[in-house]
Length: 79
View 1 (cartoon, rainbow, N blue to C red):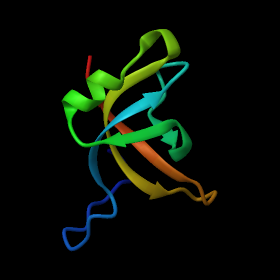
View 2: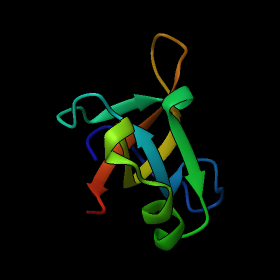
View 3: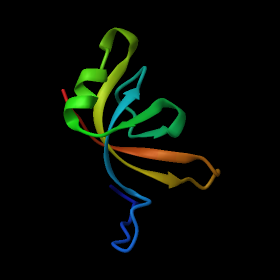
């Protein structure tokens, strides 16, 4: 991910499995209120509901934006 740096001493910003509400799947970053972090890829896939625009994904975050929002960055979709 461009602009995201990992600090090996902390676990604040790390790769996570998630279910993401995404009206358009072309986005690369999402505010934390549309991301539900889950324990595993299986949990993310089980929570996905394409009819309601909920998709399983691997994300990096949360990271604070310059506007003060906490964001998650898309690594890849899990479908």
